Length: 354
Image (tube, rainbow, N blue to C red; front, side, top):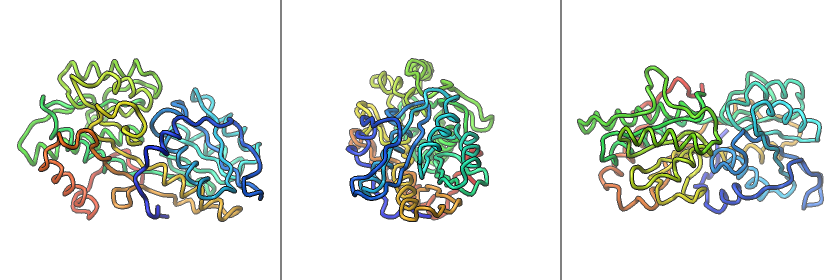
């Protein structure tokens, strides 16, 4: 399954995703007057306005509805991990035809819900399907785009130190950090430099984490620690917690955002060097649209994997930093992207989807 005609996520769509808050229970009926196809979503703990993966997934729901008015969309918010299972269970009892889980932590709860409701189409972002026929997994080879971000960070750094930290030590997070480390390593090899990565050791699979995706103070503390050690480019892979990093960036460091283009989804574009984009919006929109079209027939559970080749992952435009990045560095990054797409360069991570 491929995303057709994938375009860059527009600022308007994602701002709407971050700000729009519909009723937190499925509604019936549709503007077309026909029988509605009910697509329901359960957020991860960061909430619908996390300016990251929850927001971009919800934007996918909005995109699907804009293309087909017979699709009704709604979401319920999880404020803690113990709400995953009851939220999924409750939606199954509210005539949802399609239920979307967001985030790798929801894997077990989604598999359990899908087994209990085999006629409902489930889908999950950032996790596999547990061999369950009615779960459509939407996953990403994020290490590919993060590799480009690491190369960019190393080339932009003036201190010779860059940093990263995560929200939780789970595969959808560490995959970013692995690619970032490898991109810095590549830059050092090409240029004979020794730019250091603080906050993550790929070999040991260990580093800095806030242990949630919400607390901005925790994000600030991690980035303050990295900046204190000399990092002048920091990539938080921590959802809403990363806003604490962006809010305090500027004079000491700049930020590489993740998931959805930070210049479209946050107020901090002036400090965002670029974003490692995970195109959940188009992946989810495509899945919801196809499920609605073949209402009653399950999607193939082979799922979708986003890559640089199909624009499922990407490095966002440089926006306000475009004139500040050396043209030669930009060209090198474009060359690396082409080499990854062609298979000349393989970027791997223990966390990548199989």
